[in-house]
Length: 474
Ligand code: URP
Ligand code: ZN
Ligand code: ZN
Ligand code: ZN
Image (cartoon, rainbow, N blue to C red):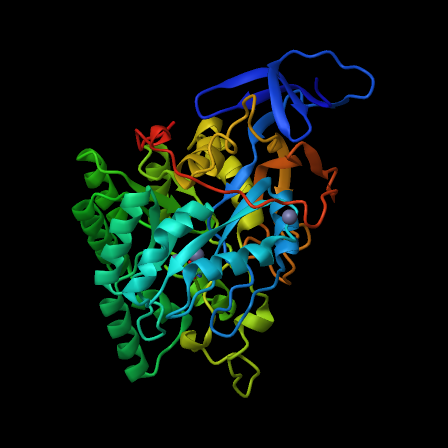
């Protein structure tokens, strides 16, 4: 029968909002309808609340050795922080270095993630790799990892993939139904611009953003799309920040070619004026923060389906790591040198609240679009649908209950991400996750974490083209 009923909530999917109960048995959803409460069955009253599929995070970097820094959270802490933001599954990236087996790196990452309280998966990654490594792609897909990130910049650091190898990755990915994920920044422009500001000796936070302007991102985006179209392999472009890049995707979509596009919460809510602040180093991420107009253009892309998913790109470093290599002047102020600051921002726990409040709450998106952008489309594109991403019989009982009337002021004191600052300090949201259920267990309730270290399971993924027929998706 069932052992948990969520009663009377508005159950949200990308195409409907229906008042009904959700019946759960063990770790699965077993029915939608109206169910009698009975002894031994826990009943949760969700009257007036949304019941949504748990948020899926397909873009984060926890315990990633970047520029000598590891990040503030363990995978367990990361899963706790995510759970408070309604996240019930997350994916991280294999740690690879030039020449390292990607499959081995994926297995090592999986072992590190086993302590997670929520389900998890791993993406492969190809850096400056010998072309033979590309032959591992069928084994990766077989292992349940059909997605691989590549960087189009950071050549000097040995991270950028050369375009010949990238093309080979596209070809192999196409053979196995895989999905390449791309960090699009044009290396030639970025390195040239960095050399120029080095020459004039101004490595200020403001100049960081200037070395990676919109054009730099759009140039790489355009090139990646053209190569993908040439091979006829769909690709995902992560952390997209502005209209010029979106227009490249729109053109591809018009010709029927599926370029999947992600953007993140910080590009929707935080802007490049933060680089004028003394603590601007905390906002260094790639691509950099843009302008309020760019954010409006991103909202437009979310509305019209050009952007298929959101991802937090969470990369949580405390101030000690962000400032680890900075020096101070005689007044105790940091001497601005963006080349010495690890890139990345926190965002896992605030993605859903921001989309609820700034999106659904302000009429920019429907609640159904928020559902698609935080969960359903992520599951479809990354290959774990319908196990994840939908409230339907047979799917995992991963749910988040949302109260659109709940007002919260974001602050370091209310988040659970192990750092001493909050980039959204003082930012008011209306609409917040109040309960998170993972595999049928309530893991966040009344502001308390009730999950279990190690309860998360590795999810084998396989992308099924029948869910990807349209890229407006659902
Ligand atoms: O600045 C960022 N985005 N750091 C994380 C790594 C990446 O490029 O996604
Ligand atoms: Zn990236
Ligand atoms: Zn990232
Ligand atoms: Zn486990």
